[in-house]
Amino acid sequence: MRYRLVFIAGLALGYVLGTKAGRERYEQLRKSARQVAQNPAVRNTAETAAQQGRQFAGKAYHAVSDRVGDHVPDSVAQRVRSLRERSGGNGADDWGTSNT
Image 1 (cartoon, rainbow, N blue to C red):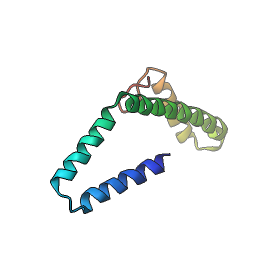
Image 2 (cartoon, rainbow, N blue to C red; image 1 turned 60 degrees about the horizontal axis):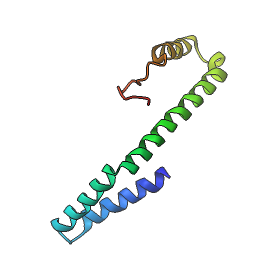
Image 3 (cartoon, helix red, strand yellow; image 1 turned 180 degrees about the horizontal axis):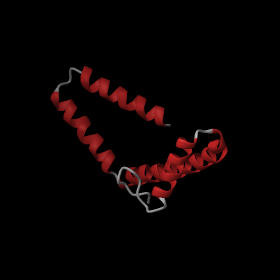
């Protein structure tokens, strides 16, 4: 799904940059894109997808670290432990965004 969205965005960008329709068509496309981006349904879907992605990433992180933990150097294992302790479920990630 992500690749499809990137392809569509690239197609739209190529059209905008390559078109001879001029500024008027560009403004029309920009207005449409803004309306889609501000649509509550689109925003809710994007937030839901982001939240699910964080959940899957967390599960994968724990599964991999549990299986690989004994096979990595101590310095890497310490770093992983410190990251786990630091994240500690405080509701925010390293980028300052909410996990909700």
